[in-house]
Image 1: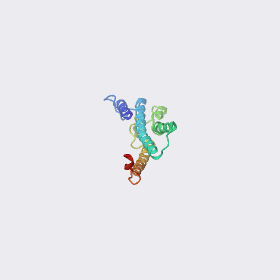
Image 2: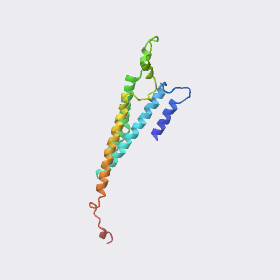
Image 3: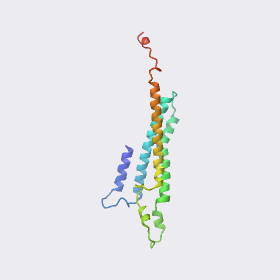
Image 4: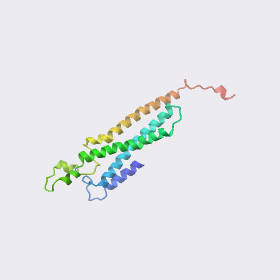
Length: 174
């Protein structure tokens, strides 16, 4: 739900009017909406990871989980995406955002075509190596989710194995 609202917000900023070219739009509101959208996507994947971890711990262990464990899950779901988004913002501002450079250049300086290409909102990440700051943790969480899923299936098969379940139906009717 949060991800859908973030996508609608980003599209509202990028396509606010028909006469604006969204590829060259570079406003703080546009960048903030793209950052919020990327955060929501990352949080979505990390909450899937949290749910898999929680289900795995419920099936694997028999002890009662304390609130500390829930705080850790909350930090993993909401906090880890914040860390990677902040690193991504810093790398985009430092390495790829040329608006600060243009402010420092004298007005008579010719601007190269590649420099103008980077003067846009942060919604296009095709050739950026810094895009892996967001994509890498998402791919890692998908991999861990797959491993946890296989482990959960293994645990459920073991628990449902009829040789391990001791049915004593005669005691049920006495």
